[in-house]
Image 1 (cartoon, rainbow, N blue to C red):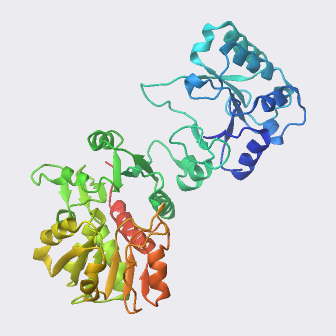
Image 2 (cartoon, helix red, strand yellow):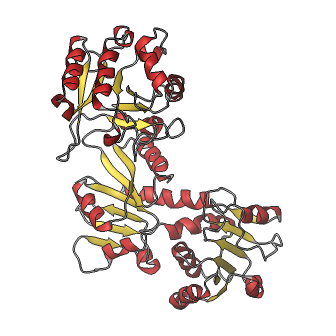
Image 3 (cartoon, rainbow, N blue to C red):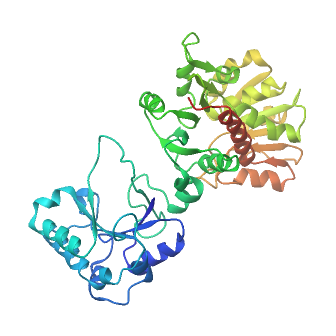
Length: 451
């Protein structure tokens, strides 16, 4: 069940949260500790309460600061308030349909408060009035069979009530939590940061279209060794890999003689892995869909890249798939980077694949760029938030004959892309590459089978 934690500091603010996510939750947690004191007092004396307080399954929680809450008073005062709340008109008028056995009104009491007189009183008063008790504690042995899944509103009140939570609409519509079960296959994306990724929305929608009992979730992680173990424990069927792990994950596939590891030629050539799957026999399979994902939108506009002069801005990890794909397609490539040594290094590494040169990203490379300006590909982070006014190619004036391709998709149009478009260039945004490589990943995920 989806439990929506209300995190606003007024009842009106909580009402706005309820209205915003109506039909996306099964039960509400009213975080009394987030409410202002005068708002908490309203619950004790008022009969004109919001309708959702009377009609919706509720968990009443007054969390102390030591447990991650906002209550900074003493425990006795806190527990006495809860006892008073149980005998107030709020409980008397609550008429929601039951959730499971008993009444659909719950009081959250930490496991340790039974040692306090006020804690025992609160529990007894709750039992007397038909209010069920939730005993909160951290379970380090495993996940209960029927846990609540908590979500909160990122844009109202305090924001998310706890680290890692997402909003209930995403839980319901993107992750389809209500339809998940013990046999649901698990896929995901690893990286850091990764919670902003659009991949969960894309792949979960694909699973839904194809009627597959599977879910795709973000896994923020910095520890690949630990995650490799987690992948086995959770029987994770497939992964997308993003910054900063694309190059590091390659180590999983470096021992060509090891049992249970298989990698694609693109992965070996680019030295970066963006897709990991499991075969039906349990083998870990590594692939790189960035190469084909980059080329497909470009070849749609320019069917043949042979002898085309292409400038690639940047020599970081993202540029490797771009350069490899261009050289493999017969293009003449110029790599420009602010740190010219990195550009030289990349050019030397791929020198055997085709015609490639390098230079510094600045006015001194203008002549070289004009000899490679059939297509210009921007792979750097310049122009992304927060530097949205930055332009890595400010020294160059577009003639309008260039094809300009930017592989980042946030924002959808950077200052540089807008400038190229205004000059009459054919432009390709990063959205197209994202969708192309994601479609290819989805195809690989579709080939996986449960074991």
